[in-house]
Image (cartoon, rainbow, N blue to C red; front, side, top):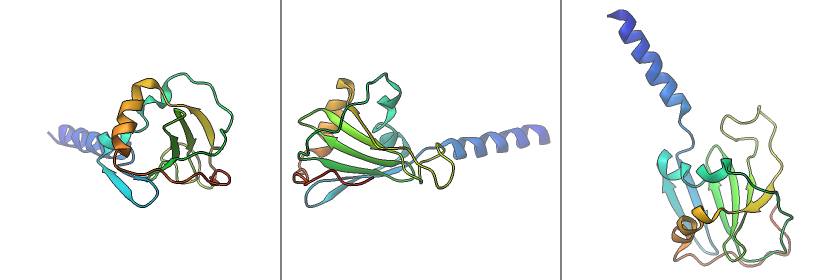
Length: 135
């Protein structure tokens, strides 16, 4: 019986430790919308494992900023179908402390575009910056 309880306790601890980020904010020009829950937040990035080609940084245009707690930042350009990804030093389980990934641009897969469009509905995009915000 003790073995079963110990195994169950270890399984629950591993499950809790394996959870990813559970909070994100999607910000437009004047306000932000919160996304909560690990399943909902994971949906923002579950397409990242799909094959892609790194794109050149586009000319600045209106965008939305997405901050995923304990993971990183995204810049979403709906009119270009592009997204910039940066997993910073706080990236969840990806990089050693003090390190980070370099930001990179890629196309947002068509399968994710409807979800992103729904998330930013009602938000005005941030205005065209002189240059892209630093990561």
